[in-house]
Image (cartoon, rainbow, N blue to C red; front, side):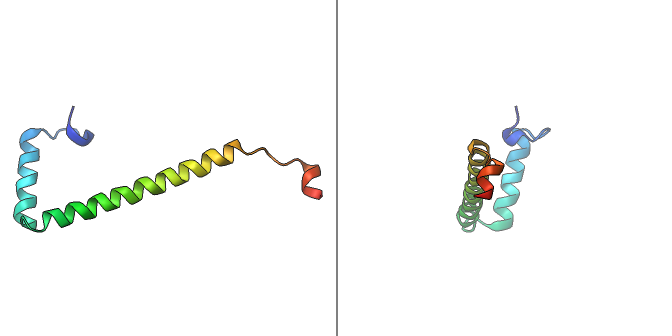
Length: 71
């Protein structure tokens, strides 16, 4: 099974990708890049969990009957 479920990318390809990233960004910029990536993933997961919670809350609410709406 490939890392991150990307078909066709094995160990040697990942090494080449990492080397290109190091050469392109430089060693000092990589921690900053990873912090930004981690922050973005965290925000995405928070938003995803918020939407999931709202959907579950909506499914668990009892529907209002017509007589309750007219009161």
